[in-house]
Length: 296
Image 1 (cartoon, one colour):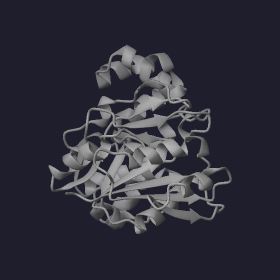
Image 2 (tube, one colour; image 1 turned 180 degrees about the vertical axis):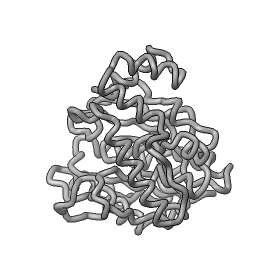
Image 3 (cartoon, helix red, strand yellow; image 1 turned 60 degrees about the vertical axis):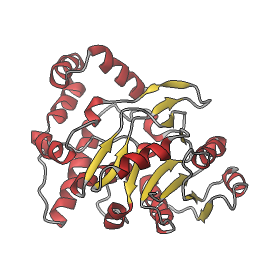
Image 4 (cartoon, helix red, strand yellow; image 1 turned 135 degrees about the horizontal axis):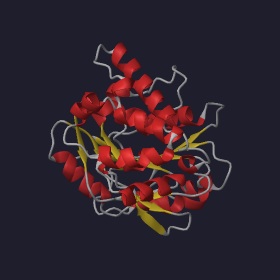
């Protein structure tokens, strides 16, 4: 059986943390280890986490002045260093797993010897746990992610943190992440874009995690999605910097069709919707629903 590790990254998620940890522990196929890195929380998080000992491995980190994305990557790396599983799950302290997630991901991972990443859509929930729908996105499901990267000159094909599970060999090859470029891209984005350079990506169609959308979520802060072309610029710079360092083929921002759509979205929103429909073959209703969820 494939050994599994769950790495939970937490900072001041006390209101949701108990449900998060319980979801990782209460699995149809139990994880071999659940490791929680607390990044110097000032709320009730540590008191909650200590009630789970010794069922979890708790790392009580000290808060630093690092930018939030760099701190998140540091926390995940410290937790990874304590882990042993061949399949490593990431889980944010305000999210939660469905009971069958580890079993289904491990089964999928076991079918592909060259797999480095298993991902699936997320069910979005609000602060109270009320379901809001799924973030399933056809653009994140490819037959060949490496080919798509170079054909589309794009690397934005991956779901957020709590949707992802990586092979140990991939994480050993890429961690710790290099943030010396000063670009604050999150660990899920950086790892996702590099994964197809190392092996096979498996994308499942059904959601197996809950992604909590509450007032303190980074991904729903005001203006987060107002100008999508800037994250695209950042992703391209980070990917190409890595490729240059490792003598791999780069991508070209100017051949990225989505970048031009994002530029049109900024300059002429109505034209953007028309072109987005024709270029991606998504229905206008689906586009509106996706954009509404992102704007919330």
